[in-house]
Amino acid sequence: MAEKDFDILDYDCIGFDLDNTLARYKATAMVEMEYEIITQFLIKNGFPKKHLLKPLDFDFLLKGLILDIEKGNILKVATDGKILSARHGTRMLSKGEINNYYPNYHWDLIDLFIRDPQETWNGPNSEIIRALLDNYDIIISLVYARLVDSIDEENSEISPSYSACFKEIHKCFADMFTIEHFRLDKGEYYAKIKAEPNKYYYKCTEALIQWLKMLKKKNKLIFLITGSYIDFASLTASNTLGPKWKDYFDIIITYAKKPGFFTQNRDFIGLDDTKMTGPISYDKLQLGGIYCQGNWADLQKFLSKYSTKSNPKFLYMGDNIIQDVHAPSVHTDCDTVAISEELFVEENHCDPYPEEKLLKSTIWGSYFRHNHDHTIWYKFIKDNARCCVPSVDFLIQVPLEKNFEFV
Image (cartoon, rainbow, N blue to C red; front, side):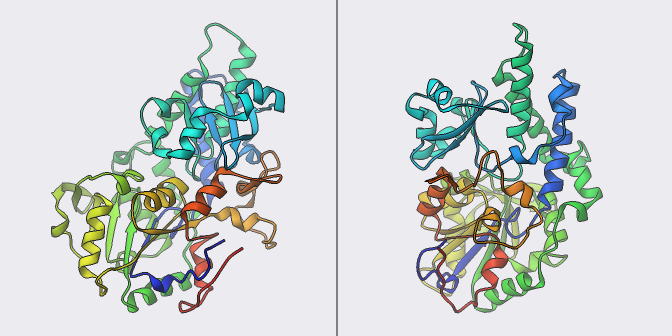
């Protein structure tokens, strides 16, 4: 789907996320690895094995599910915040049960999330509601649901609360993605990817590489904004875009801490190889430079200085609907493109897709709709993205000079 007459050549400065955008993961293998790490962590910390050691049920997974952390519920939500479908643990809730939990099928924190997702991103609300936004955290729904099942079966006064279970999952995730662990070879997540990169990454197509080069030849400034720290980003980019990946970008921002990158005023931090050196003002940024953290306002000023246009137009592409699409659309004048692999498994796409079992669910249905209702994510994309495509390669199939429209 796209607005009429979307033409990438209308933009002078074009940016990309790395993970799950330019760099595509073999997500099924990644999720399997994450499930193994998380369940072993929880079992080691005293949680019951019974449900955690069951085979990974891909059919329970769907991007965009929302957790009610205090009540043990997993929710699928419509554009207006209405709860369309719900499970308590892995048990499906009837409409009557949903209404008992959430009168008129609404929850005030979901209504708040729709108005401003960042109101639930940090602080007290983040301990009650959690939206599962990408392939990194999609596995949380199943792990959390199985812990809820265990608590309900035990029905003991000494059992942990649903919230305590989620805190342990969150602790495990924080440990898995601690940036220092990559350099120190600590933990299992980075170690497994380092050991078998071909198991977890797809190589980018040569067409994509040539497309990036063509954009630069047409005097477009190309920038990369990734949440990954420079060492992990380098591993990912080298194994997907190839050893010359840095040459494709006019500036690279790592560990950007989105969505705050688009709304806050953090300093850019210089890098000496993989070591942070100290704050850098935007007027000291350099073409071809690699930095971490920073903020959109200063990046925009920097790129505008080097653009061939006096008032350049900006575009950014990413897969995380809140971090990469909603935040820049609402808080900046940068247009966005949403990357959603789920389009590969919608009705009008008949070709088999290797990650299909992670993208469609007989339990939850479509990412974009539920029966005749559109989901909250359909609305976020429709309201904030100029275009939604299943992959960056899909854009390459359209000649650079051609406008296009999706339905």
